[in-house]
Length: 604
Image 1 (cartoon, rainbow, N blue to C red):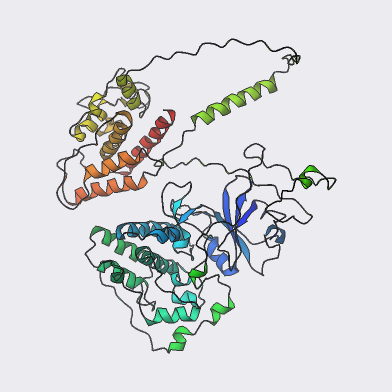
Image 2: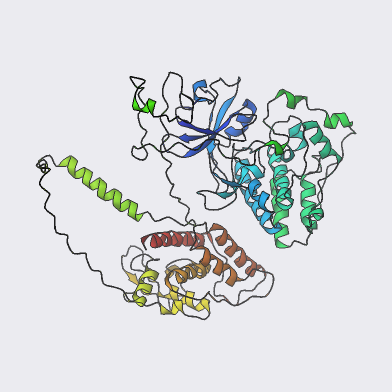
């Protein structure tokens, strides 16, 4: 394998081959302009057509498909050989990490977690399907269970893993073009594997796999000690051989799994099945695989032949010594073979390239700053300060031509030591002052009266009263005014004077502040409610706990809103003062609060 002499489309450099690249070329690259890692795959024209619509689709549980390149220079490929007519290169975001396939080698999932993950994957597929795209290679190998640099699992990767036979419906194995219903089959099969740690079907050849699918359903969940009749029915409906009786719509699967989450004992509703068509022979059902043989569809029939590690064969090359984000010039060939580099005895991880344009080493990978308000941010203030100081010094040197040149100091004369200025002594805050400053940092300047104390927020008792008291102290800004007015009793009943518009979200917001600003505080206390709804105390505590971790709070926020909706559905509302369910304005206000919270924590 030789290192490519040029970059794909002038934008993507080579970094290493993927270990599971057995049928089609797949490798890891780097976007030269941004430094982010990507995965590139050589695909046939039919697959490229289904990927055109998927370009640009973004979802928190889906890696983005970046580009489809049809005019490919052979010198940009690791093989160095031209692609077959009509073939091209698809480029997608690359997120390394531990796959679901690898995680299941260590142990299976409980049904609740498996269903929750499948619902998240279904949400990502819905975004893909709505744009007219198809994933067509969903399996536990394409699901990143422990992603690196992503806030929340699972992440559905694209192009990294090939399509696996048991996760493809029969019509796909016979050579049909990829469709959205293929992804629905794959979701059912992935759910089965997550529960049982086994593939629903397994055979060494395509025909044998088709015959196995025709002969019956997968081994029941009860054989693995899983007593879930409703889940068994859902899986049976999704893995039926005949397409007319199979669940092929993503929305139908989501409704069934959502119903199981609400009541695992309730069976999914009966379905209207179209009438059976005219009788067909076994050869007509199983043996019609001629179309599939004519097309290199990239399906790996026997998934056990793939390596367990889906990573890259080569480690990324070390970052160049030049500045971050810059692309160094191509290396110059040595004039004499006896140069120190040639005699050092070290060898490159790639074969020496043929004469031609040299590929610049990839820029160092830069960490991305998330714009998701629910995602915890890293502290960036020290980096901003250093950059500002360095940039200011450079500007001064550039615009001060009248400054005298520096006088060289003789080697024998040591420079005089400059006395250091004494460090500025900042007044030490008391514990109460530290707490109050912490609380006010979560709000805009001027949100509270000067000298306001917040000891009540750290005490024990009914947390509803603590959250309400905190909101009563927030000052409301009049439109067009810089000054705030204290929010008194008369203002509480006037919705126009509410300063934060949090409403229900006052509870999690106050819980986050309490966790961060009250040292050694006990968990929040909220009254228990009757019925099957998740307890508000549990949800609010979870949000407060997770706010201190490096993760995404969006799932917790959705759980909170789901618990509130449940209270409205069961008319258990007399214990809370909020009259309406959370609105879009409330959600936006909570997102703004979390953005301020991330800045507050970064400054501290």
